[in-house]
Image (cartoon, rainbow, N blue to C red; front, side, top):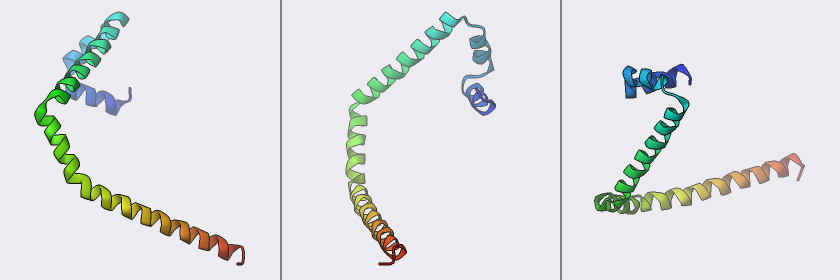
Length: 96
């Protein structure tokens, strides 16, 4: 683990937990990984089951719909313009 990441972990967990974790056996470390992964999954499931979260997701999708459409259309325009420019450059380079 590089110093930047290690310092971030220490800031989040605290030095005591970091030091305690360093003393755990390989089996205990594996248990920490399993338990932490299960905790994350349970929290995600709770979030997904929350009606307020589902409504917020639906609202966000509706709010972003106009932006998404504008972005899609304009990205297609950009790709077309770049392709035409590249085609013209190839034509000029080949002497056409």
